[in-house]
Image (cartoon, rainbow, N blue to C red):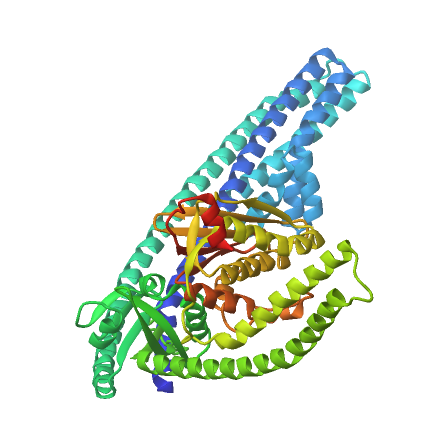
Amino acid sequence: MLRKAQAQGRIRWLLIGPFLAVVALLAGLTAVSVDTLSAVRAYVGGESLWSKGQKDAAYRLDRYIAVRDPADYLRFQNALAVPLGDRKARMALAQTPPDLEAARQGFLEGGNHTDDIDGMAQLFLRFRHVGFMADAIAIWSEADQQIHALNGLAQQIHDRIATGDADSPELQALIGRLPELNERLTDLSQRFSATLGEASRTTRHLVLVTTLLLAAGLTVGGVFLTAYMLRQQARVERALRESSERWVLAADAAGMGLFDWDLHTGRASLDARAAALYGLPAGATEVEAGALSRDAVHPEDAVRFRAAMSQAIAHPAPVTIRYRLVVNGVVRHLEANTCARRPEKDSDDGVSVHLLGILRDVSDEMRAAQLQLDKEAAERAYRAKGEFLSRVSHELRTPLNAVLGFTELMQSDPHDALTPAQGQRVQHVLDAGRHLLALINDILNLGSIDEGATALPLQPVALAPVLQASLHQVETQARTRQVVLTVELPGAELRVRADARRLEQVVVNLLSNAIKYNRVGGEVELSCEREGDAVSISVRDTGPGLRAEQIEQLFQPFNRLGAEFSKVQGSGLGLVITQQLIKRMQGSLTVDSTEGVGTRMVVRLQAAPVAQSAGSSGHAAV
């Protein structure tokens, strides 16, 4: 296997290497071509400056001879500085080693642009022995000799004129040499320009031919490489089919479905059993893998499912996850065992990463496990209920009986009679204590949260008095919490079938919870509404609200949803008892809550017939 991988690696580099070399060669050729053509252009421009300087120098020298003005001779020297600067640059580059700084200074004196100087120097050094550049340099060297001769001839003429020579035969002989010298310089300038032009055309032709040849090589190589890759792909697909057939045999024997998720294409192949688990048509199926996780996986498991798949992709170790599917409205539990298959490190067969896995329906196992958990939770709740009721019976009833007893003694003591105001206050204490004792007894009698308790005796009850009495019991609590109570009391004719005292207990519990778990300065709204054959009693608060998972646990005994760690006192039984009382009055309790906004609890009871008179209605309610 190692030798095969090494051989495949060598083949890969034998195929890819020439492509990389050709691309690098093209890049280098392009860079050199651009630099060469730019330098040739700079030399052509420099030749124009050289020619202009030479012609300007010849004109200024002729004028000096005719007018004998020293300023004209100075202008001659300035014009001749351009060709002399280029001569200085050529001689510096021809040295061994070349003096690049002197050459740069010479090119600057020759009027060349500073950005072109490095390219001009490199072109000279690279190609001075190559045909086109060698010819140009030879012409340049001869022209420099002629420029040097012109400068020497001008100096001799200037010396004679400066000594007062007006028209001697020697002076005329010197002047007579000027036309021939200028004509020679003009001819050299034209030859230099023509040589550089031919060099530019030759370079462009070479670049074009070389680029076309390399492009043709790339095309041929691409065809061969594509054919090779197609053969490799066919071989891999054949191996995958053979492997898949072995998997199918093993899966059928174990009663499991198989899937193969190609991460490169995003497609997943499922065998007949796996397709059936997802509710797809019978037979092996290829589908878009994202749809399986996006559309079929239960929304509550989607994030966990994607995290497990990401872990399987990132790490080579197998991953096992259980999740829920929603297939045609039916929830099904699946177990997936998956592992990423990656191509070998030195493989060149083009195989992308695959997630291979086994699917198994574990719905029966999950239901059995959930039943066991529910049973254990019910047993714990039952034991907790018994312990709580025992504690309530011992801790509350005994001191409460003492409070009631002493309160009754205060009312009936003939030796220390209470004032009317005191008697009224003591009566409030006695009434509240008796109400509390009655509630404790009711809790004990109902078995707290037993589902099999007997239904309460129901009768028509007017809502307004019950709601008013409930509000009186929570007003002090609302003032203490600075919670605003907003109440819409119904008319006297609105009645429900209920137990008046239990209904009051239900409303007090709901109002008390809405105040207790509200924010300071919040609002609690109590309202009623007739809904066909039912009447709804709504209690809305502006508290912190509940999450979906908290609502699911809201009616579990002793579960305060984390409030046990707060300063708010409670037992976790208030809503449980409230819900059971509502059920015993053949009603329902619904909860609608938004986290950060508040909670709305709605009690729905059967509507009672309208009373014949207000008096009889009010009497029946209390």
